[in-house]
Amino acid sequence: MNSELENGTILPLMEAFYTIQGEGFYSGNSAYFLRVGGCDVGCHWCDVKESWDANLHPPTKVEDMVSPILNFPSDTVVVTGGEPLMWNMNFLTESLKQKGLKTHLETSGSHKLSGDWDWICLSPKKFQKPLDAIKPLVNELKIIVKNKSDFKWAEDQKVGVSENCKLYLQPEWSNKEEMIPLIIDYVMQNPEWQISLQTHKYLQIP
Image (cartoon, rainbow, N blue to C red; front, side):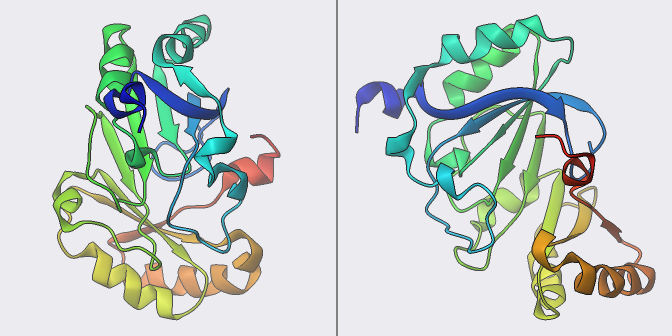
């Protein structure tokens, strides 16, 4: 591996954009998104499959990723993918924090944690289960519900998170009409869980 990639001073950036966070605890808040290429989890319902192959996305200097963010009024930066933890996130988060920016991570938890994060959203996938070590550190657990068996998966994944961790059930978009009524019933019976919707898709924004 390129030493700059190993050190995290360059990263395979797929896209960067300013928008509204559509999911989970910060849904409805403005944020700048950095989508990093590369993912070895391979969810068949992934809506950004073009992110999977890191070789398709140009290695970009972290300073060139950070400087455009300062042109926008929000102080929150969401690092997503792909799977960001395939790469060393230490230099990126250090650079963001030096500019007074808040660092949010969206991850499957399938790789060792790196980086200094203000908020970690763990969205574990059955295809490659999360590492146990990350669970006590996450602020938000978001389970994608595609079928009834995912409720059991959600309860299994809840084991090991902190008592302050926010718990979300989110319908898989292509199956939402069938799953939303089941999620509503489940949350009414299990009030420690909340419902997350992909509101950015309803709003038709990135």
